[in-house]
Length: 309
Image 1 (cartoon, rainbow, N blue to C red):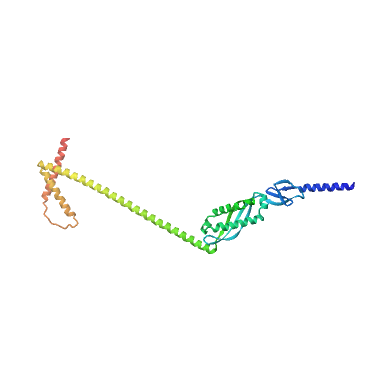
Image 2 (cartoon, rainbow, N blue to C red; image 1 turned 180 degrees about the vertical axis):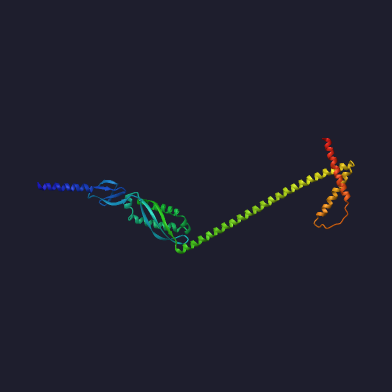
């Protein structure tokens, strides 16, 4: 009876142990592959899973979250024979745990070496200037090639980024000198363009000034002509009045006309630049008589106006 009780107790402990061994909890973000007698049979998802103890065993515990790998620094020779040092970073995620576990050995090492090889291929087909200015294009090309190559491994490469591109020191110095020369060239071009614009504006100003000056001369000539025309009209009218007076036998009008021309001639002689002292006889009485004739004409004109009123 005591032996039977011991057997039951051992059987009970074994049953409890079997239950604990058959229950496999899987944390979130992880997946386990299960093998039966060394052959893959299933994948355990996050949560509680049941396996057969001593028959089934957990082979690989795989992280299904997105992971990151550093790409070691390596030297790359560009298309124009410039040597640069390049490193990067890879982001990937396991999509199929069974393929990631059984299609490739040392998954992380395989991904890193694949990326390093394709970095040399892609960057080796580009010039140094393209290498430094087209990182987005390089990243996109690497992502396409590597993602396609790793698809049979059950993983998805989500991003590949080139972290640093370091040319040799002598090449950096040469590029600095080139950039300095380029900046000086742009500065000289801008300065020349500024001088050119200044000369153009100056010429435009002189042109506008000449146009305005010509317009002023034109306006002045027009006004001078108009003034001469009015003066001629006044003289013509005065001559007509004198002619009428002479025709009527008015002696004062004749004296006025002669005296006016006489005085104008004396004025021109006196105002000439090369004028000199000239002694000439003057008939003062004739001039005074002419002035008297002017007075008589004025009186007659005033008398006629008063009679009309």
